[in-house]
Image 1 (spheres, rainbow, N blue to C red):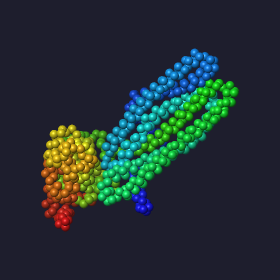
Image 2: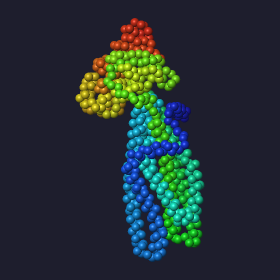
Image 3: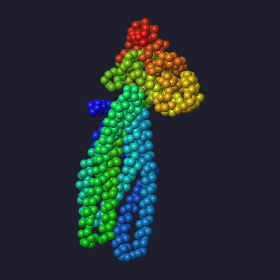
Amino acid sequence: MEKKQTKVQEAIMKRFHYSTDQVIDKPFNWKQLWRLLAYLKPYSKSLLPLSIIMVLINTGVRLVIPILIGVYTLDKAIVNKDMNLLTKLIIGIAVLYIVNYVANRLRIRWMNQLGQGVIYDLRKHLFSHVQGLSHRFFDQRSAGSILVRILNDINSLQELFTNGVINLLMDMILLIGIIIILFTLSPELTLAVMVILPIMFFISTSLRKKIRRSWQLVRLKQSKLNSHLNESIQGIRVTQSFTQEKENMSFFDGVNTETFSAWQTATRKNAMFRPLVELTNAIGTAVLIWYGASLIQDGLNLGEFVSFAFYLGMFWEPISRLGQVYNQLLMGMASSERIFEFLDEKPIVNEKDNAKQLDRIQGRIEFKDVEFSYDEKRKALAGINLVMKEGQTVALVGHTGSGKSTIANLISRFYDPTKGKVLIDDVDLRDVTVPSLRNQISVVLQDTFIFSGTIMENIRFGRPDATDEEVMDAARAIGADYFIEKLPNGFNTEVEERGNILSVGERQLLSFARALLADPRIIILDEATASIDTETEVKIQSALKRLLNGRTAIIIAHRLSTIRESDNIFVLDHGKLIEHGNHDELMDQKGEYYQLVKSQFKMLEAM
């Protein structure tokens, strides 16, 4: 059993060995901090100044009260038995406490609104940015890893923006004010009680890097945990069909244990700062009592000593909170580094500054000496030259890895060619805006993605402004209405995540209706019928004819029976175009296409 678990733990390491997430070991980046604080700018004329005003009122009241209690109440009112002054002081102190209470309430309310607003803006910015990144970005990262950045890492900044930033300002003002007052009351006593500060500063500085790295490691482990959770949920049917629940649980236990251990280490290091401040406070208090007693004998007023004691107690409070804010800052910086890593990610498909809108196209596609590589090592396409005429149905045929899907990706401009040009209606795709291109192209994949929501909403995804009647017309034209009307609520039936209540064929018909509603000029079917049985495929042939009518259609299929009627067939092999023509022409040539057809017939006969 132990040996089996060891193998599972090794599998964990192997699965995450190539993860793009890693601990970012950099010195504290002040530019990055200012970049993070720039998200406060939208609130610089509203919540931010209001919060600062409340901070100033709150800090001012706290600095005044000890003087009133010690110097004025004790040394003047009580010692001189001035009851009139004592009454005024009591009323004044009470009023100040009420002002402090109101200012504190308003500060907390406005700071929470400010913090939530910043988190909202940051999450929106990050999600919007990720939406525009190229396919390569998503190819290199798991969905769980991306979710951690958008959810957990941004959530970890919430405390920093809700309390940390404003509290930092308040505590700095409070600390400076206390130090000035302490030196005013007794320079000798102030120097004596603060002799311990350099030692505390030295120790806390040594903790800084360790705490920061610990929180970075926590974020990394959380990312791995989320990746595994997402993978496990998506693949639960495979796990259960192979009875791998125990192994999957062991896998999860390993990742969960790593995350738990990282949290323990980070919190343990984080917890070392507060006891250090409390120890310093205790030493400072002892010095105050010992040295202060001798100063009283030498002429220090009792009221000044009491005020000094008040301020000294207040002095360690912002010191402790500054340590907490600093720890929040370290946690925030660990998360912000991961967030800005995504925000700094640039799409590999960039629009030119002078990119123009692509007007409604005819649909003629041309590849001129196109080369492409996904990893800059192995060529996925090598010197491709081909023309797809407008309104034609063309097919891309070849073994796995021959470059069929790569051609489709270049037409949709999910990638740009390494060399050469891809043109539509004689316009280089790099000269036009991406939305104006993709708005005229629809892609139907083998694994149709159905979103949570209603049937109506899923079809309308192709054109959000379509009316209900237009959605229904698209479904009828494809022939999807026959099963939709049998559902409990027809077009308003809620489908589960990924459309699990629907069969493969029904999901595919929905994807055809979605594509038809979008009314593209070019449509790409990437193994769109590969998962459908032959009987179902026959039923949806009429839907395909309706969908492809009047459009340039590119069909990628291993099942050659689906492409016999294509106007032109391009045969690819290892990224090179080796044959093209219609079915009869290619069969007469008795080349690669002929061999592919022949091998499929043999396979069908064997079945």
